[in-house]
Image (cartoon, rainbow, N blue to C red; front, side, top):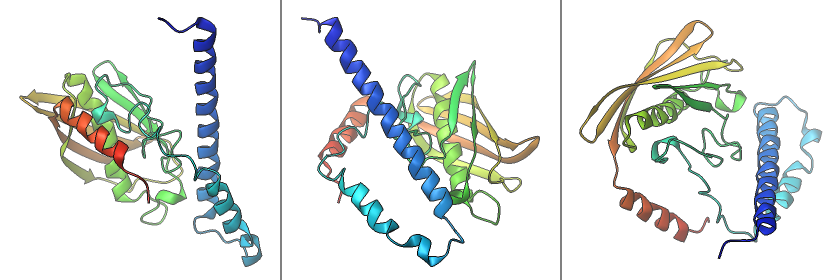
Length: 225
């Protein structure tokens, strides 16, 4: 029997409100991280802040992480190339670890933008190379979807052409080169304005969806420490 329309609409509304609240909270945590990293604030500003944050964290302690995989955590394992990716550490609007990246498929390529703040700094004023690589992994994970056989990263090679600056709107582009059996090969580029800062090649290997289901089941049995 189908669910009554009124009840279904209420459920969708409640879920939508929940998503808005979680994303708003994640934005607030991002702002805290940005302002805290390498802050010059005097000692008295720190007084009580850690306790306040622990009190906030304690409000969530009674509730298990049973919504961690609503949607997908990364583009490479999204079988239809779609989201939401709210919990992704790179794309997740509900994950304060994420910058976040904004990615989409346009025709036969993946495109996107990103802006990295202080939390992602490596060399002075520049994005840490590990985060550049992670951005490519996500970008090319989406790009390989255009080949029709989603897979997981088998190899990722990054060429750092120029320092990638912080606090700058970066432009990302990924293209599919070829499909060879279970393997999909893609290339990606990152620009800061007209400057090419990095390029990458990624090899993705198609995965058995039954195996992916096993991973989901294993994750569901894990309890955060």
